[in-house]
Amino acid sequence: MIHHFDFLVIGSGIAGMSYALKVADKGKVALLSKTTLEEANTFYAQGGIASVTLPWDDFEKHVADTLVAGDGLCNRQVVEKVVREAPQQIRELIGWGVDFDKDQKGDFDLHKEGGHSEFRILHHKDNTGQEIQESLINAVKHHPNITVYHHYFAIEILTQHHLGVKVTKDMPNIECYGAYALDEKTNQIHTFLSKVTMICTGGIGNIYQTTTNPIVATGDGIAMVYRAKGLVRDMEFVQFHPTALYNPMERPSFLITEAMRGYGGVLKNRNGEEFMHKYDSRLSLAPRDIVARAIDNEMKISGSDFVYLDVTHKDADETRKHFPTIYEKCLSEGIDITKDMIPVAPAAHYLCGGIVVDLDARTSINRLYAAGECSRTGLHGANRLASNSLIEAIVYADAAAKHSLAHLSEYGFCHAIPEWDDKGTSLTEEMVLITQSAKEVGSIMSNYVGIVRSNLRLERAFERLEIIYRETERLFVRSVVSKDICELRNIVNVGYLIIKQAMERKESRGLHFTIDYPKKSN
Image 1: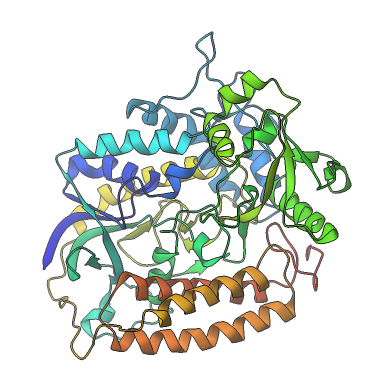
Image 2 (image 1 turned 180 degrees about the vertical axis):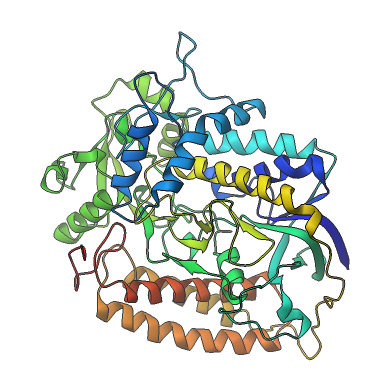
């Protein structure tokens, strides 16, 4: 089946839905959701969204904090853009119905998180992402020009490759004409032809064994663009959130927001002793990469699987008021956070690299844009400053909307694209081939490509993944397409990119730390 839309949006988090809303008055929009609109990284973002708000805060302070966290690899022009455009995008979110918490005076109740010099994190209790997601969902559902396709899995973006042209990464004018997508309910593959395509597929957390990401976060957009010969960079910078609730039986891991440390939570070892003074003068409010490595080291020293986050010294009523979701979740696990310390451990959380985009959110492939966690804008550099991700997503969705609307009249549909051909394939009877390979990828990435790395570990990971890659490609060629085989393919591609780019960086910087090159190169 062939569909024609002016705009094809792949992904339904804050980037995808805000982009759809920004362009929908000017054309027909198809919004592909891998599961449902609620199942996105945005929904699980507890902490908040960063924007200069207080009169004694200013753009330069926010810029400076972001540059420090990025450890020398941020693009200052990008940082300036995001920081300065943030207040307008916050106003637009409020216009879509987002309700940020306010104090008794009616002013925004702002949080402060690790790496921020001022209180500038707007939030809705401890479920900001959910509040944003639900408000955008409501706006999307009421826009007549947006058609939502639930349980549609994008398989490949369409380029000249599908017209029989040999496409290489050095080819200057690769064009995107839309995408093939699998309707999981019917197992039919649909051809979506579009004038403009927007990739907003989120993160890669589920290539690791332990992650705070929803199970849909398998790097699909990054893998698709990489296979289409688009530019992908900085994949070695994987952020591990320092404080996920320790529960080996639960996947994804439940996130204990960084705002809890901003609130006054203190990290302690298994003996109840504070330890962050050994690692950084900012103590528990140091940037995430430092805190994650400190926790990892303390766990190795003690041989334990977790450390503690302690808020028992804070007012119990205030704690319950500020963190109701965390309070209820921990209580369900037998932990009263007003009386008990919270067992926490690092978990894969956020990717700072991804699909390379310019200031207009354009990828290296014409007519293809990207925003959100799957994109590499240059904002985060080697390490993301807390709560900068949601604001980056909507600022770049806005940039993509402005540029694509300005050029929409230049684009048409490529009617020569053939429909998906699955002749000669058969149903995969042994699902164990897929599930076991996926488990192996998770084990390889967690054990060899985690918080602390080495040449030996990376080389071993590369060799192991190469075997899985060959097996997966052979299986894909002879199998009827399914979400499971496509996701496996994608996590293998993404794992390869992380390992390869980690091996190429001969230094330790930001989120990439290797014992073979423990210092920065400059």
